Image (tube, rainbow, N blue to C red; front, side, top):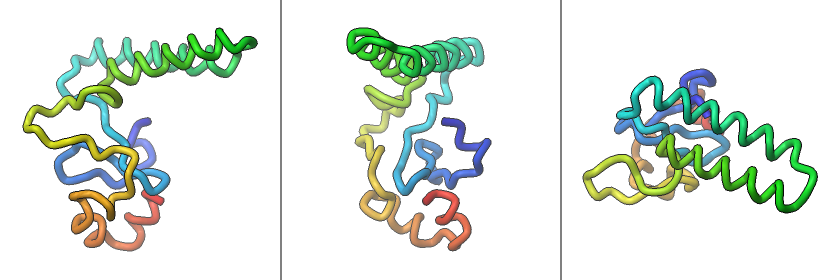
Length: 114
């Protein structure tokens, strides 16, 4: 997901954006433009393969390809930051260390993340 395109709220440390009431890990900012583009292309191809899969095996393989692309982007798997902070993705911000930040956002910003 591209957080900037939809103007989702982003955590102050730049690690997550909030959509559908959950924290979603952002792409590793250390990736080169060419690495990021290749991983996004692989992700889009894998998502299309999921959509067009006509067998259970094809669906499993396509979903594995989606997961692999998301890991290449740093959005899944090991975190891309190195300060020891655990991943808090897929949690509502008020249930994380971002609770104070979330509470301080104006109502419009929180609505963009809902």
